[in-house]
Image (cartoon, rainbow, N blue to C red; front, side):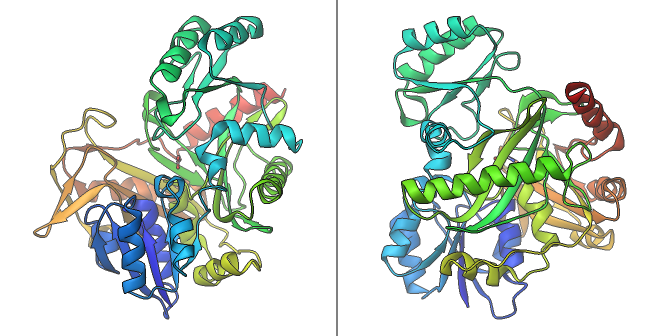
Length: 438
Ligand code: GLY
């Protein structure tokens, strides 16, 4: 089967690896720069994944049977609408159904309209004064969210990026005045307190097949300090749960996602693709923080190496609407991202890094390349994350030890979080939840 993967990063490298496990796959890719991992296993074209006419033309030229869309930005622009119109089957939501990520007001209104559990107190505003009055009356810490996509940089939380509700009110004005995320509007939400986790699922419009739960580490530095990043690493456990999250809470989270998929179907049509639920376990149970209309990055790299079911069969099930579930190996995983010094925000791009893939492989670790560019047999960094290392083990602790040891085989002006997946950090999470749940 001819499969086109759209996107450039480690998530897309992991999707490509999963697709070629089926020996019938002929792999094509569109990426904005030369990812060495994707380049060596696909026939590729260097082009922006947001250039929809070029992607559609390439898909038709190569007569691809199926396109899999990695990132959210082309989904918002209607890449699936364009490909489907041209006769190419897609794993990825249409621009209407991707609104579950690309329009945060749509998402919260859907929860309210369809009485889906796990939502938060919220209100949508187009007027900064009205929003300010609401924040004053509400009296508790709030979260300010631009309605549209902001590349992970728009959401600000009182007590984290914002000092207090007064600062939140100034930020609301900035979001509305500058039309941040493409809308002159804002969503104000209550601040949820607890531990965050990710539930990803394959979705065929009606049925969902959940994957092992993962916890990401968004803060740049050890001890959850420093600025928010795209994700510095993540772990998953042998039973598909997390050390602080039991089956009951996982099942409740999946139920929330099932309710959402049904509501999207009733409201705008069938959602087909990968769905990423960012949850927080609070003292009142799971709360939905946000959805992404795609795989997580790094979370895709935790689950895809464990997939037992043929990934291409799953993709065909998504397209045909007869998804039959997905089985995963019962191993723990730890993923550590290697990023340029200065990331996020101040990294100097175009630095050479050396990756000893042979040694990494000998140490039972997988490599997924991210925002790097291959030129003249060298690998150059950009200002974003460089590569992810993923190890699998019988325990999280074992996977962490293997993964950490593999980091020595990457040379360059880079850093990573040594504490991702360590028992000290996981104990902290368990204790935090025990305190909250009482
Ligand atoms: N792990 C964060 C994201 O995929 O957006």
